Image (tube, rainbow, N blue to C red; front, side):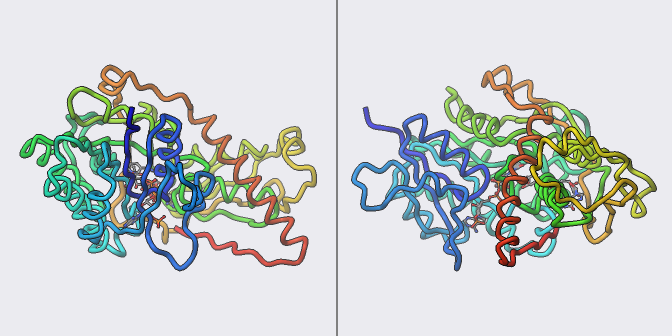
Length: 382
Ligand code: NDP
Ligand code: GDR
C-alpha cells in the first residue's frame, strides 16, 4: 500500500517537530517547509534528518515561506499531500504588536495561500487541511470555559490574523467542500517550547538560577491564567482531527487553568526552592522563602547557586506587559473527548518537571563550557 504523504508548514517549530516524529512513527512520508536562515534553524528536527543521498527516505525538507504563494503552490504540486498541517506562523503574541503587518501576512494570508493552492491544483478531493487555530481567538473573556461555540474577541494583531485564518478555513470548507479543519488549541508547552514564551522563559531561568548563571527573573503579568497542556498530547489531536469522517473544528485543552505566578512557584519547587510572593501589581516580587536541601542535593552534584533565603528571585517589570492582555483561558474539550476520543496523558506537574529537568541538563553543558574558559550567550527577553 502506498504510504500517506503529509506536508507540514512550520516543521522547525515546537509542534512541527513533535508532529513529524508522530507521523513518521505512523508510517507517513513527511515533507516539511523550512525557512532559509543564515544559521541552521533545524535543531528541533535534527534527530529526524536523513541524508539526501539516501534512496529510501521518508522525511524531506523544502525551502519555503508563508508569504510566497508561488513557492507554496509548487511545493504542494510536487508533494501531492494527503494531509497538510499548517503550523507555520509568527506565533509570539507580544511580538505581533511590533510587526503587525508581517503577522497578518504570514498568519492570515498565509493560510489563504495554502487553501487557494489546494483549490487551484484541483486537490480538494484528495488533500485534507489542518489549520493551527488558537485559544487567543477568545481574547477578552466572553464566557468560561471556552468551547467551539464561544464568541471570539481577539486582543492582539496575532489573534486578529489567526481569526482571518480561522474563518477562511471554514469558508473554503463550505464553499468548495474541502476537508479543512481548525484545531483551536490552548497553550501547549514542552522542553522544545520557544525560549521567549512564558513557561520556557521561567524554566530556563529556574535552571540558570540553580546553576548560578542568573540571579533574578523579570516577568510581566503574573495574574494571567492559562490552560497549559503538553505539546506531545496536542499533536496527536491534530492527527485525529484529520482522520474523522467529516471535517469540523475542535477545542483542544485540558480544562484546567493556572496563573503565571503558580507556574513560577511550581517550577522553582522542582529545584527545591520555595517562593513566596509579596506586594501588588508592578511592585510584586517573589522571595526565596526556604530551600528544600534534599531536592537540591539530588539535582546537583556540585551546588552552584549563589542565592540565599530572603533574596528576591522574581520581579515584575512593566516592559513585559502587553498593550492588551488575555486574562483568562480555560478550554472545554468535551467535543474532542467525545468525537476524537482524545484525552491528554500529561498533567501540569509532569510538564513542569520535564521542562525544568531538560533546562537543567541544557545549562549544565554551558557550565562545562564556562569552566573550560568559553563564553556563552545568556540573552533573555520577552
Ligand atoms: P513555533 O513558534 O515554535 O513555530 C512556528 C513555526 O513557523 C517555525 O517553524 C517557524 O520557522 C515557522 N514560520 C514562522 N514564520 C514563517 C514564515 N513566514 N514562513 C514559513 N515558516 C514560518 O510555534 P508552535 O510550534 O508553538 O505552534 C505551531 C502553530 O500553532 C503556530 O501557528 C501557532 O501560532 C499555533 N498555536 C500554538 C499554540 C501553542 O501553545 N504552542 C497554541 C495554539 C496555536 P522558524 O523556525 O524558522 O522560526
Ligand atoms: P501566549 O503565550 O501569549 O498565551 O501565546 P506566552 O507564553 O507568551 O504568554 C502567556 C501569558 O504569560 C504572560 N506573561 C509573560 N509572557 C511572556 N512571554 N513573557 C513574560 O515575561 C511574561 N510575563 C507574564 C503573558 O502576558 C500571557 O498572559 C501562546 C503562543 O504559543 C501563541 O502562538 C498561541 O496561539 C497561544 O499561546 C495559545
